[in-house]
Length: 356
Image (cartoon, rainbow, N blue to C red; front, side, top):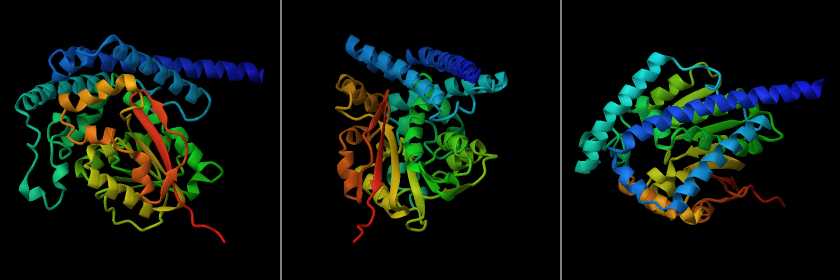
């Protein structure tokens, strides 16, 4: 009976996952297809050959298969929103806002308007590289409206796969926690953005002490809303290059899709700061785009991305030697990198002091 109950529970869980993800993919794919004919990125995508299209299609399907397997195996829980039907008025609002902002993105693409947010008065508060309209998005990282529409834009770009890609870092976090009480550990999410990844972490380890850090007051405000009701979460507005937090005060550092937005010097500063923040033996779970050579059949896709969108540091990141970058700051690879569709998860461990 117990085995039958377990099988039924697994079947119900799998059905809930499948239904929620199919609806999610359909929703975001509909927005992608509707908008792509007008976006410059459509021209870039159209020139890819059958090999690239097949690799994208297979990688997309494999991602969701892996995501479902992980949930059924207990690696992490069903996403928080999977069993909560969305409000129709909220869906309509987000859809309308997405298409309205698409018009502004088109204008910036045509005009190469990637520095509308630059203001000399802000340069004392934010690095110059930060004051850009990344992805040609309205207001860059600097407004509540940008923070509110960001997840809709990202999920539409990846036709509903962004959250599943991020979740592939959760098993690495589980391994970093293994054998210890989560309530005794501290984690910091650098450049937490809207807080969606940290929300998944808290869904799985509610007792874990977590810090959400971001340079944008608007995005940090959105993260507060995302994480409302979660216990043991603190928020800090700061640059990931220099957080101002105590050395050796964290067990785990995470950074999701941060490094490809940074110039090389800033990447090195962030890695050095993460090394300073971590206790000896602590883990840095690094999540970002795949790089050149990870999936050679997709190298052309990677090289096209910064052409269609304003991503000035993307190509350089795709050429970055991550082992060398982290090794220079006293890190060593903790486990083999995990590829998940267009995302790579790489875990690094801060060196522990040698014992006599």
